[in-house]
Image 1 (cartoon, rainbow, N blue to C red):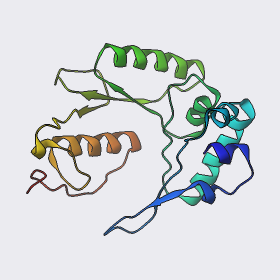
Image 2 (tube, rainbow, N blue to C red):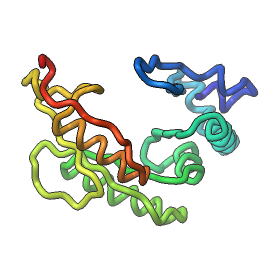
Image 3 (cartoon, rainbow, N blue to C red):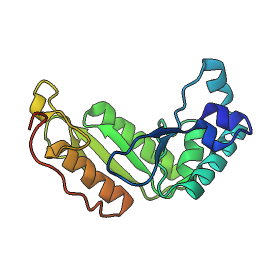
Image 4 (cartoon, rainbow, N blue to C red):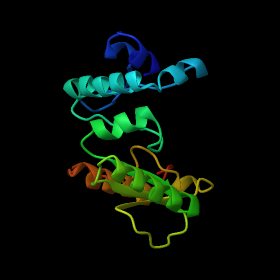
Length: 181
């Protein structure tokens, strides 16, 4: 992505395709890894404007475009949240996550974003004020490790969060059982 916002190369040149077995359609990712010098140049106001243009270009090519950005504190993050239809904040269910959510909510309000969703990861099972809760799986238990094709509490929670944020019905049937079943 950093090269795409600094040059006039086609969006397609920055995309990495993922295989979708048993599915139609296309899934592509545009990673933003680069040397520090290029990362610094990609944070200018001009690069942020180009980032907005790249998001618009992606929207014309794909049914859905997800933009993952750090907290709203830099040009590219502001460009991201002002260029998309929906914003979701994902944070852990600890004090740091609560502080981060509050800080980012204030920043979003400051730049005119009034509708957004909060998704919290929760290892403790405590009640949280959030639009979606993602349980933290116990990775020491092979039967609770989340898989993309599996069912279980984690996968169901991710599906619920996606349906909430995207205001859609995934219409998927999740399998039950653990990793070895």
